[in-house]
Length: 326
Image 1 (tube, rainbow, N blue to C red):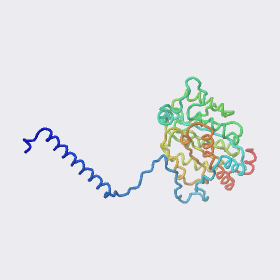
Image 2: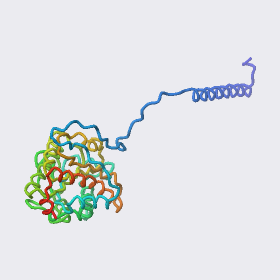
Image 3: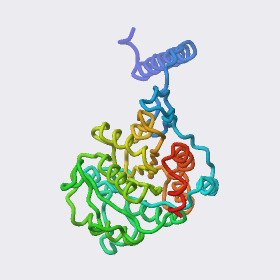
Image 4: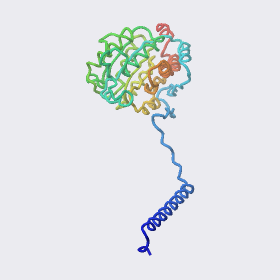
């Protein structure tokens, strides 16, 4: 009887009972592990690792079967450079547009140490530091073989321009080189009031006007922006209009993103005469070094050879214009 047991005997009985429970629980666990077969489910895809899908396209509303996206065929910067030269245009006019919307204040939380993407170096503002300065600097170094003459540069999305216009950062004239672009950028971001909403239509429409005023010489528009559009329709309309002139458009995404919408945005545009748009996620190329700069440049220029072929085939880039751009 329990009342007659000594304290040591009671303790032994409790230990034996606990050991028995442990053995039963262990055996039950092993049995469940080897007999349970869960139903397989489709794994979620991290949008940061999702590749841009080339979606089936509907029939274009133009007579050209041109909405087929340009493939990314080149493995080195040398290859894409040679392809551009082979297309007959070794020089281009450059236009740069940069985003002055308020979202730049918080889009650097992960990729820029929680700083505003437009933050300038507190002691040496001219030092290449923030993502916009880095992209402009890399363009100056790696696009140089393709660039002819001065550079038009515009800001958009601040309190004055919002989503309806742009302003020339160098008053009414182009910048003479990338160094001047960086200098004027540094001055503008200290003076302007970031606002929004985001629209790429104004900078694209301004670029169309510049191409037309130049006699339809080949231009490259590089848009540097931190986010996606609030409304796609105006930008889509501008891209359709831009496919009637010799203009290649590269959108460089800076900051945290996410970017899946922009990575697939190109696939949703109907009615263009050719695929004139390329998106590049700048943060995906890692820290600033020679290899990352080369990889970024390759991604940015990847579609230009096929775009040039389409322009020539459509009569958008005429032989006379190609000679004038040299």
